[in-house]
Image (cartoon, rainbow, N blue to C red):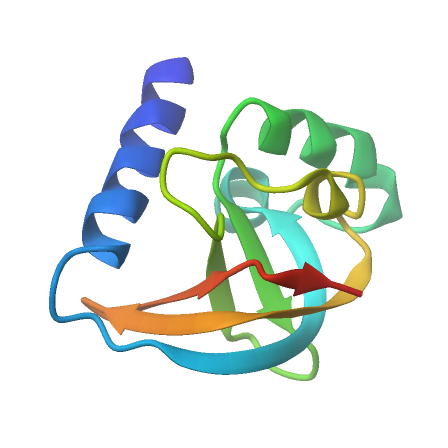
Length: 117
């Protein structure tokens, strides 16, 4: 699974930050999910919080599932070569509002993390 996490992060960063991506500032309210468990097993909710935090700390991409929809944003750090802030990791499975730059490329929507409330 470690190789999967590294490959996933590399894919996210290479696709999301390659030239031609369009950035637009946006605020999205939704639930922070660990993408692996959420997508492959449907695991989410308060009982999954510790697992989600552990996966996020290990580098599994974090998804923000927009409230009232099934739209997912892959979260990116604000700067290259940095990790997601603790304000994301510590709020896994919680409802938050993330503000940042929105990018869309290859059918995937990304959101940099400028603030989390």
